[in-house]
Image (tube, rainbow, N blue to C red; front, side, top):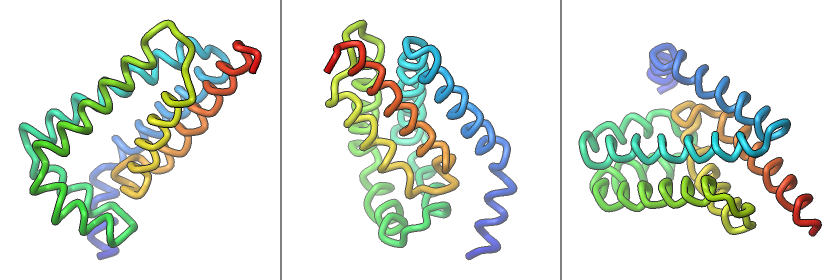
Length: 158
């Protein structure tokens, strides 16, 4: 199992590194240019939705790749036994979730606790995928969400 995981690490090292670098860049935007940080998150959610279109409706078998990376056995069972077999509608829910988050982050209104909460839950659900989610990129992105939320609450004065 460990040898197979190391082979996957070598195979996906460049995309994993890019995910972390982009997460750090987005964190910087959230800190120093929150408006652009919001737009960056909106773009991230749109891209995530497109990836799920690919995974759920074009090549659902590729969802199985993520099972190799997860560090939680029950998550691995969920991917192999449930997610893969129900990819069309579960992937559809993920697509709707991503697009809705993109809408919430693109609109000019201040971000609400609900928006930040939905985004945080999505990132928390991705975190157990480990290397498959670009870990620790998900945690870096959650820090970016926190900075955006703090900036939004300071603007409102609450």
